[in-house]
Image 1 (cartoon, rainbow, N blue to C red):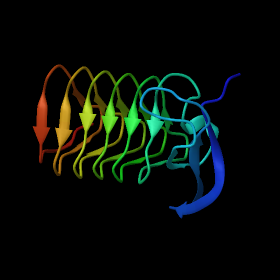
Image 2: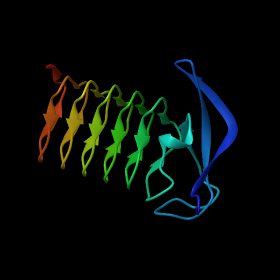
Image 3: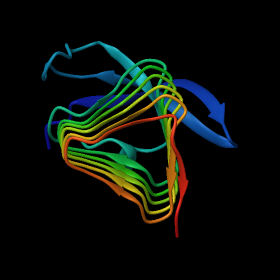
Image 4: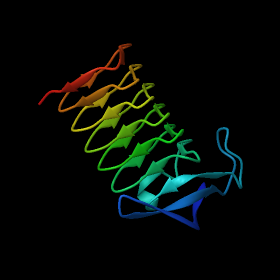
Length: 152
């Protein structure tokens, strides 16, 4: 298999997990061979396929995964069993955890939290201090900011 990144020896401790900085081993998307990325706990956190990437300042750990062309950057944290896929962006201090899914061309940023089994999909945007949990689905071209929803 042609790998696109490797885990370096540079580590950081987050929530009792040891994460490793990643480094690109080839050119893909806007990433160049040798570019340093953010931190992941294990190779399953970031697919070797597609143009997905974790940028410096971002963290992906536990059983969370980033796949396809999804991007995680700007102090974002993705953990638990969450999944970032499609062309989704998670950034700016957002936190995605539990079994949350962010997919499509959606964006989650600011200090937004997505957790539980919540989904943000299509071209939806969740930002600010929004907190979406439970089994809530935010879809279409919906824009939510500073909303607190903990439905079950």
